[in-house]
Length: 328
Image 1: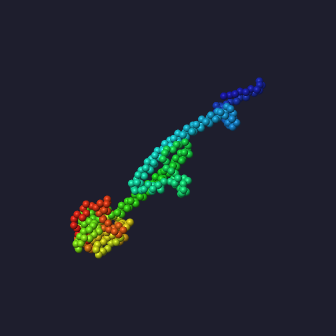
Image 2: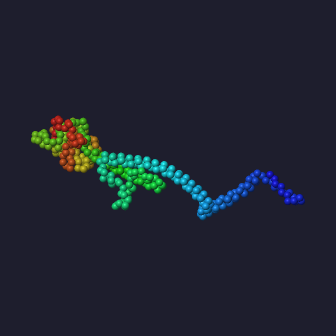
Image 3: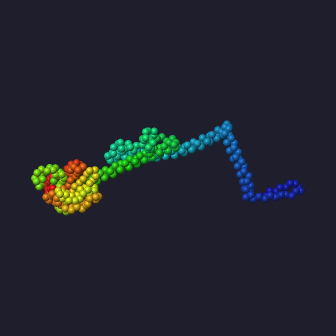
């Protein structure tokens, strides 16, 4: 494109030639500053109008701000509602887990006062300086803001920590009970052998006079394996004038088992023994009329009826004292 400019009849004609690119650049160079100036003026006017509360402009600004705030509040509300539903579901699961924990604690033999020790100390109560979790949630909490959400999350976390402590305590108690069960002599010391002579008064095989038989006799062939009735530690293993070769196991809490008249002892004092471990072999050493195992259970040094331990429910086996047997 060309532009011809003539000042007069005698003046030379000036020719200006423009390309499409130069026209575009010229337009941009003119429009950009104008737009910047317009934006600056607009913001200056709008800000001034908002600050000085001009009748029309300030109303328009407040309308725009309210609209934007409403959109933000709607977005936040939708997200809070979604988060609240998830946290509420988690809360319900934790409370069901809490109920299960209390039932299992009862099955483990724990008393309610033991569980109360896991409950947090209310803020402001005596001794609250020790620390602890907030009270567990019992009812759904209304969520109205992020502060409410943070408090709910904190309480759910505290409930989770409390349940973890309860299950740790239950696990510890069950482990204790398992150890106690392992230390109670409830396994037969000789496999598949009926009891020949039970606990109580009987005629002494040597004198014929009534005497107290302080254990159970298991008649067996010489060399039959003798098994530990429970886990424990070998308290002694040696020769006794009446019991012959005698093994004593200490199971703790004042509980001792004796295995008498053995032909061979396979353990020594101080050995750690597990339930069912072979500790000796049946024999007829000491004051005995034939090969058998004389088995005793002592609590605090006093002989008890071993049949009650072997039965597991405080009842003697039906085969006790059913047949004569070699005896001490």
